[in-house]
Length: 118
View 1 (tube, rainbow, N blue to C red):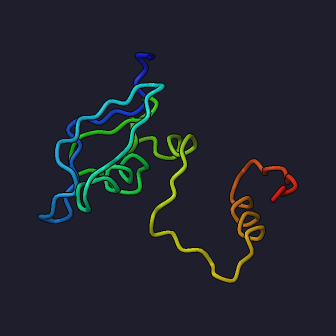
View 2 (view 1 turned 180 degrees about the vertical axis):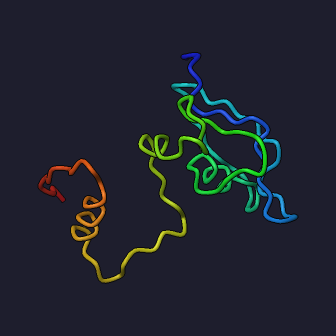
């Protein structure tokens, strides 16, 4: 196992008013490790992921991915990650190829088209 830390949080806390999202989370994930978030609803799994992606900001503490502060360098961090939220809704009548063309149009570097083998 490498000693390179890929994900690190220090005393990470998020409060929604008086409601706790996460409290004092200290986490280190090293290169080559696999991390799974398990726990009941309200345990802070989604909140932690959203802080790591700079979708929401912590009340206190810090979070870093690849040594980059998630809040100061959110755009740079997101270039290395993918996130599929559980509550994702897509356009019900849009074909998949049209949806992927739409997503591709948002990227600076345009992906090449590959034939579908399904």
